[in-house]
Amino acid sequence: MTGQVPGTYDSVGPVLQSGPVANAIIAAIKDLNQDVIVVDRGAYVRVLVPQCCVVTRSAIEQHLGRPFRFPGELETVMSAFRVRFS
Image 1: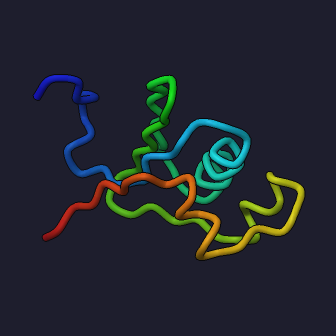
Image 2: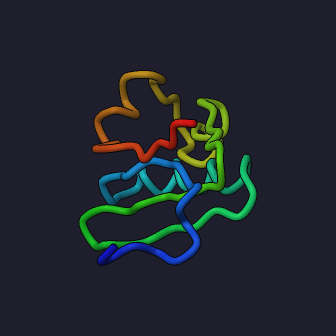
């Protein structure tokens, strides 16, 4: 597949619109998951985690430095989410 990151077949995770909120979400995902791959595409960022991607409101708020509506605010920056069905 063109543009595919090697070794990501079983990976899942969000596609986020670039910016400060996305940066906080990415930092939270990195805190809560192992082997996180971040692919910066300029206007958006693809985050890939093997098998299962975990993120919590409290982890996002810790990095954002303010309250975060969850769900609600997440959907404003998350344009897609890569999933794997078994």
